[in-house]
Structures are given as C-alpha cells and as structure tokens.
Image (cartoon, rainbow, N blue to C red; front, side, top):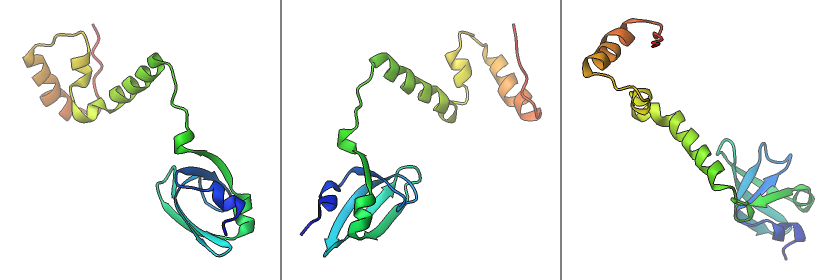
Amino acid sequence: MPTESATKLKKGVIITSGIFPEKVEVITIEETGTNCTVLARGLKTGHIHEKILNSEQLEELQVSASAADLDFKTRAEEFFLGIEANRVRLAFEFDPLFALNASRVDAVPHQLEAVYRHILPHHKRRPLFTR
C-alpha cells in the first residue's frame, strides 16, 4: 500500500533533500513494502543517484516542482536576448571569423590572410586594431 509521501513522488518531480547530494529529478520509483527505491538524475552534474528510502526519509523529501509544472512564460524580447547571447557566446567555436563577419568592417582578402595566417599565429599576445 503506497504511503502518502510515496504518492507525491512521480517521474519528473524535482526533489531537494539532504538525502541526495544535489537537487535531483526523479526518473523512476519502485515500492517494496514500506520502502521505496528512487532512481534520480542530478540537475547540475547529471549523475544518476539510486536510494532506498524508508517512510521517515520519504517524509523529509521536499518536492520543489515537476518538469511539467515549470513556467516557461516570458516576454518574447527577453527570450530572444537570451538565445542571442548564447549564440554569440558559442559562435567562435563554429566560425573563427565570427567577430569580423558580424562587424560592419569590410576587410579585403589580403588583410584577412595577413591577420589570421601571419600575425596571430606568431604572436603570443593578440594585437588590438583601432581606427
């Protein structure tokens, strides 16, 4: 017979407790008599944690929210700015010339070759070009 604490636990619920080393999201719950085996994934590290909890430990669990209960409502402008910030932060990994391509400077091909093939590889410090 499931306890009241066990019934509030379900897949996707986020738990905060001293029992787990971090906030976790419940993957599965298996009841065995008065105990429950909880399989959960850490929200920060992604590590899988498996704990067998008795009824007292189940009472200690603090259910923060579930993935379905999270509110993703925000202003469209704020969402766009967040996505754009991540795109710019990661852009150099995919396009080494991103700064130049995103700027308003129209560089001539021989200038690009000089900077990226001769100046930057041979200097330990990157030069700062100003107008």
